[in-house]
Length: 259
Image (cartoon, rainbow, N blue to C red; front, side):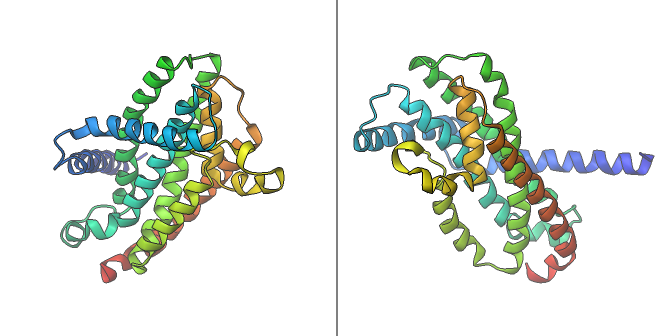
């Protein structure tokens, strides 16, 4: 790497880190609880979902709240980070018009600052799991794999959405609807075997986010990963990153005309 390229890399890394810090500050700017809310919100949601769906579906397993919370945390990160990436270019339009910053850093920072908050919120999952008797096993070491695939999936989807969002403003509303459909096919608050027959299993398996959540839960509950499902999610994530990156780079010079 040449000296000039190295300097550019260091400069972009500094800008990216500052954008990530800015994103975290702005997210909790008007909140009295601050980042503590990222711990309380999933915990409160878990309690509500456990009471409602645990009762409706006759769940008597005391570890059911851990099952719900693990799915809720991963879906929550996917939802918040992709939505933030979708809005990132327009949200920073004033800066883009005045100062040159590689535009791809805006959706990247939107994903990364949400990822940091998500990782912090995993503390709640760990505490709830221990309290309810779900103790770590050797399989917990595999938890880093679905976490990395999850980040890749969000990066790919975020880049695609941020590109589309510049030219098609209604994408924000359409993505809200799409997220609702994705949520119901992630098996967050139900067990797939109880709700879907085998002939409908493709609905879940076709959702890469469900595959990530399923393997994450395997690590938490001490089970081997579903390698076929994980491979599908990984391939999907890599392809989405490639498509998103090339689409973004091809269209980024036209962003200034639309924002």
